[in-house]
Image (cartoon, rainbow, N blue to C red; front, top):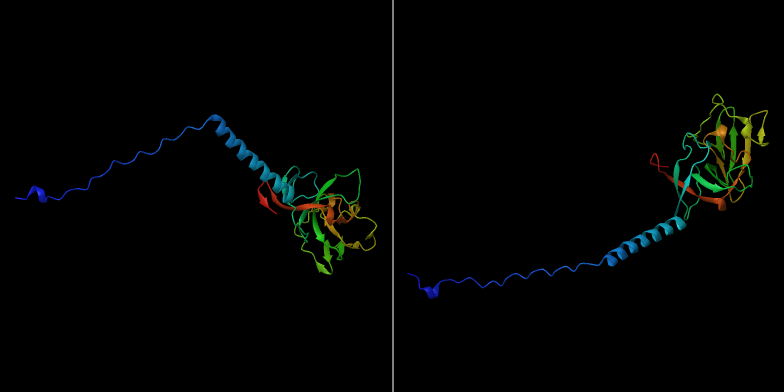
Length: 209
């Protein structure tokens, strides 16, 4: 028989410590946390929209079929340098009370570049290179340019419009060419300092541009 004195013994296990009781927070403390989070969210949004992004709304038909009336757009404004084919929002360089104060158009050419529009062949060349005019929309004129949207720079004999973009300016067109006041006429060249930003996103339908 085994000697009871030689039997193996189990080590003594101390009872597990109970987790500390959670202290109930006061309603005022919980509300303060929510207010603090809300304040930080508002601050971050203000910083983003002041220094980086803006929201605007499309008014008018000049950018159909790319953009439609009342669509909301997100602009990137911080450290933006215009490039050909960008869609931009800008303040008018020329003051004309008959037009909206803020417009959205597409950049076709930059400072120093020569723009030639052949209204009969329906082509645009920039510094002698044909522009890939994939977004052009010639509405209500049997797929022809409405020459009423061109100023005196259009040669009515040949149907050729020619201009050179001044320093510090860009040349813009609306995609809906027969329903757009732009750099061909009353709007004129756009001062780069008047550009609010590049359109990067359309909210509905959700599309990156």
